[in-house]
Amino acid sequence: MPSELFPVSLRATGHGISAGVGKFGAFIGVFLFPLLQAGLGLRGTLLLTAGVSVAGLLVTLVLPEPARRSLEEISGPVPVPVPATASTAAV
Image 1: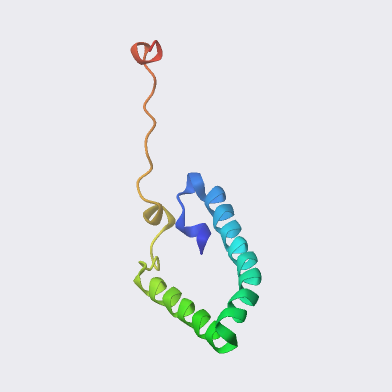
Image 2: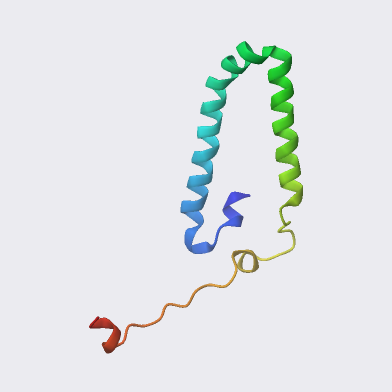
């Protein structure tokens, strides 16, 4: 899904960044879980993770659905580069 959300010109970079952030979140979660368990107990930690999952579900439901839309529609208008003229090139 992330590969369809970014404009064509930034697709590889955007997908790489989103994958990296996901992996970083998993890395942080592995180290935070024991700390949370020590502070909140197992029941509190699992309730907290359930709450975060529900929040993620709600955010997913709020985001627009890209079904039956082309990649060009999703990525939006493509900026047209302005050719350099002699007067702007000298500046």
